[in-house]
Image (tube, rainbow, N blue to C red; front, side, top):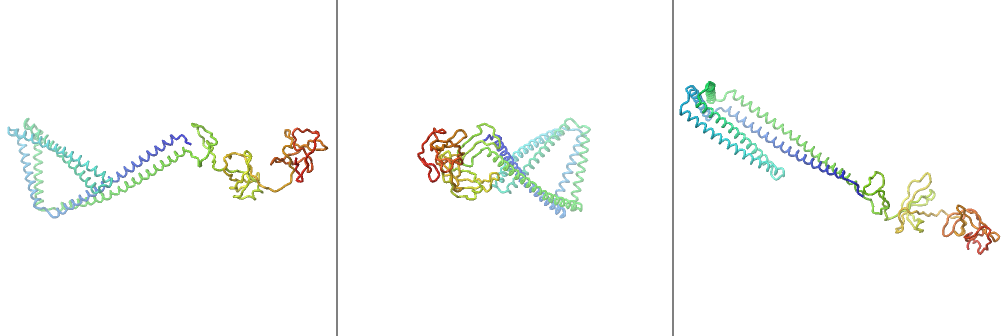
Length: 483
C-alpha cells in the first residue's frame, strides 16, 4: 500500500541537492588549500632568493669595488656631464631662440619618440598574448596536477612562469608609459622650439641644469667611492638588508601556518558532506515509510479506507490474514491448565464445520487472568481449506467421569423458555418440567426433573398433557431410555 509522498520525495531531492552543494564546498576548500600551499611555497622561495641576493650584496660591499664597477661609475660621470651639457644647451637655446636646424632636430625627435611609443605598444601587445598563453598552460597543468597526472613540481614551475609573464607585461606597460611620456616631452620640445620659450619654460630649463649639476656631483661621489672602496655605512646598510631578508624569510615560513587553517576548512567541508549524506539517508528512510508492506503473504479480509482517503495514525487501513496456518485460542481454567503442556495433542471442535480435529498445543500464556482464574492457550490446527479466521471453536478437555440422565433430543418439549418431557404414568402422558443440559450425539442431558426409572415418551412431537399412550420400551440398565 502506498501513501501520498510528494513532500517526502521533495525532501529527498532537497537533501540530494544539499549533498551536491556540500561536495562542491569540499572541492572549493580543497582548491583553496592547494592555492594556499602554492602561494606559501612561492613566498618562501622569493624570500630565500631575496636573502641570497642580500647576502651577495653584503659580500660585494665587503669585498670592495671591482674594476667593472669603477668603469660603470666613470661612465655614469660621463653620462651626467653630458646631461649637464645638454641641459645647459637647452637653457641657452631657450634664452637665444630656436634656429632652423634646431626645428628640424626636434621634429626628428618627435618622429623617433612616436616610433618608440609604437614599438613599446607592440611590446605590450606581445606581452599580453604571451601572458594569455602562459595562463592557458597554467590552467592546463593545474587541472592535470589536480587529477594526479602531473607532479606538483610542474605546477610550481607553471606558477613561476605565470608570475614572470605578468611581470614582463607590467614591464612592457611601464615601457610604453615611458615611451609615451618621451613622446609628449618631444612634442612639448617641438612646440617650444616652434613657438618660442616662455618664462616658465626658461625656469624649468634652469631647474634642469641645477638637477643635472646635482646628478654630476652624485656621479662623481659614486666614482670616488668606487675608487676608494666600500665605506662603513655601506657595509652596515648591506648587513641591515641581510637581516631584513632573513626576517622576511622567517615571516614567509611562519605564514605557512595558514595551510593548517585551509586544512581545517577541508575537514569542516568533509564533515558537512557527511552531514548532508546523513540528511539524505534520513529523508530516504522517511520516503520509505510511504510504502507499507505486509510482513507476510495472506488474504485481505477487511479494508477501512478507499484510495484518496486521509489516513490517521493508529487507525487500521487493511486487515490481512495469514492463511498458511490457523490457531485456536481458548481460555482454560487454572486447574485444567496444570494438566497441559506445549506440544501436547488436544481435541478441537469447530461448530460451524461440525468437525473435530487433533491439534497440537503450541503456546501457553505464562500469566493467569485474576478475574476469571483462567489461562489462555493456543493450539495449531491442521491445514484445511474450509477453515478461515474468526470461526468459533472449542477446546475439548477430559475433566473426569460422572453419571447423568440423557434422553433423545426428540423427547424434549420446548415452549418458549420452558422445557420438559412427557412422563408415562398409568398409561397417560404427563408433562413434567425439566432443566436441560448439554446436547451431544443426538441426546440431551437432564439436569433436574427426572430420576432413574421414569418412563418417558421417546418423541414429544404432537403429544399433549393427559393423552393416553402405550409404552413400547423400558429403561436400560445404564439409565437412558431406549426406544
